[in-house]
Length: 116
Image (cartoon, rainbow, N blue to C red; front, side, top):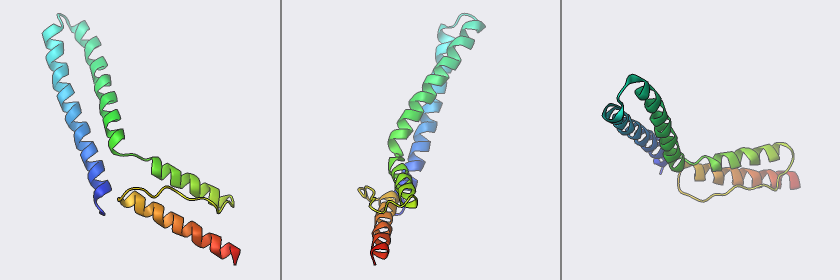
């Protein structure tokens, strides 16, 4: 359970690198197959690299979701400002879910301490 997040991040980086390598090979192949002069190569290659980067980034963002972390940051800000009624979503079975459970327990403990 402790390695789930690390494996997701590692897998996303590997997938991103593989996508970039494949697209890089395709860029070389396409530019030499269809380009008749150097000027065309200079226009096509950067555009294809940008497409590869966008595709790779979109793919890795789906694997590593940081919304729960942002939710916990927002909840901590609310507690800092005095709102002790906050809670965060605990779904999942990775380190982020464990952290969310700890946050909720901490918030409930603060509520009990203030109520006493």
